[in-house]
Image (spheres, rainbow over the protein chains, first blue to last red):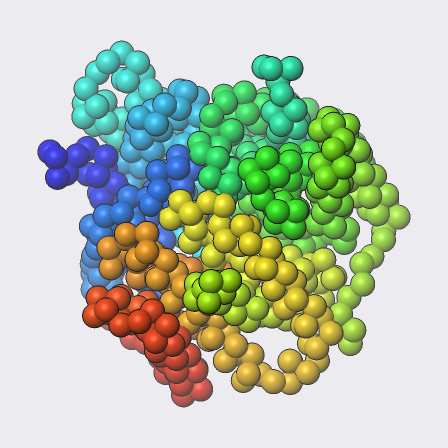
Length: 204
Length: 204
Length: 204
C-alpha cells in the first residue's frame, strides 16, 4: 500500500481508460502513431495536471512519477493494435469512459480535501479533474468536448465528488468511499446514456 | 472591508457578469442545465484560476473561497430563468461583458503587482486574466474567442491594466485606481463597439 | 553569461520565432493589430508558461522577466511590417517553426531535469513546452494544432529532449548538448517535411 496508495491507483486506472479513449479518437481521425501518442497522453494526464497545478502540488504526479506516463503510452499501444476489436465493443468503450470519469472525480475531490479545500471547491475540482482530460482531448481535434455534448456527464462526476465529501465528513475509510463514489458515477453515467435520459433545458 | 477586500469584490463582480455571459451562450446553444452550469463556472472562474496558477497563488481564490463558485452558479441560475429578458437587452449584455473585462483586468494586474511582478508582465497578466475566462468559454463551444473576433477588446483590457500600474506608481489609493481603471475599460469597449471602431490591419 | 544564461537564450530565441509564426497566422486571418499581438504573445509565451506552471516555477520566466514579453511583441511588430516578405519565404518560415520547436524542447527538458524530474517525465515536459505554444496559437483561431496535422512533429521534439537527457546523464556541457539537441530537431523536422515522410498508422 505504500508503493501504490489509493490516489495513485485511481490516477493510473483513470489514465489508462482515458488514454484508450484518446487513442481511439486519434485512430478514428486517421492520425499517425505520434498523433495517437499525443492524444493518449493528453486524455490520460491532462485532468490530473490541471488538478495539481491548481492545488500547487507541483510537479504534478503525472510528471513526478514515470508510471503515469508509461500507463498513458501503454493505453495508446493497446488501442493502436486492438482498435478494431475495441471499435466493435461500442458499449464497453462508453463504460470505460464512465469509469475514467468516476476515478478522476474521486481522486480530484479527495486530493482537494487533503489540501484543505472547503467542500464546494473540492467538488468543483473533482469535476474539473474528471472532465478536464476529455476536454483537452476533444479540443485538440477541434470537437465540442463530451462534457457539453452528453446529457448526464458533469452531473455524474459531481455525484462522485459529493460522495467523497460526505464520506470524509462522516469519517468513512477512504477506500470504501472511493469505491462507492466510482460505482455511483459509472452507474449514473451508463444508465443515463443507455436510457437516453435528458436533463432539463432553460424555459422558452 | 476585511471580509470583502477590494480584490475579492472585483473577482466576485467579474465572476457574476462573465458567469451570465457563459450561461447565455449555453442557452443559445440549447445546452441542458448542466451545460449551462459548466459554461457559467468556466467563464466566471477560468480567468482568475489562470492568473493564480501563474502567480503561484495556489489554491486559486476561485477554489480557496466558496463564494466565487456560488457566485458563478448564481449567475447561471439568473440566466437560466431570465434568459428571455436578457436576450432582449442586447446592449446591456455587451456592457456586462465589458464590465467583466474591466474588473478582471484591474484585479489581475493589481494582484500581479502585489506579487512583485514588473509593470510590463503585470499588464500582460491583467489582460490574460480579463480575456482568459471568455476564451475558455468560447473554446468549449468551439468558437473563435471574443478577444480575436472583436476589434477593440484586448486593447481596452490593456488600458485598464496600464491605469493600475500608473496608479500604483504614483501612490494613489487602490480603490480609486480600480474605479478609474474599470470605468476606462468599460468606456473604451462600449464606445468602440457602438461606434464600430476598427483597429489597423497589417499593410498589404 | 550571468545576465543571459543558456535557458534564457533558448526561451528568447524560441519566443521570437514562435511569435513570428503567431503573427503571420493572425495576418493570414486578417486580424487587426491587437489580434496580431495576442497571437504573437500566445504562441511565443504559452509553452514556457505551461512548463513553469507545471514545475511550480512561479511566476514563470515569461512573467518574471520583461524581456520575454518584449521579444514576443518585437516578433509581432516584425511580422506586422514584414509579412509580405515573410510570406514569400515559405520554406524559411517552416524552418523558423522547426527552430522554435527545437529551442523549447531543449529548454523544457533541461529545466525539468534541473527541477529533479526523472528522464521520462522530463522528456514529456520538453515535448509539451515545444508543442504547447503552437497548440494554443492554433486553438485560438479554431484550427487543429500543428502537432496533430504534421507527420513528424512531436517526434522531432522528443528526439531533442532525449538528447538533453542523454547529454545530462553522460555529463556533457549543457551548451553543447543544447546545440546538438536543437540541430537534431531542426534537421529531423525540416528533412521530414521537405521529403514528405509519413509515420505509420494503426493497422486496419
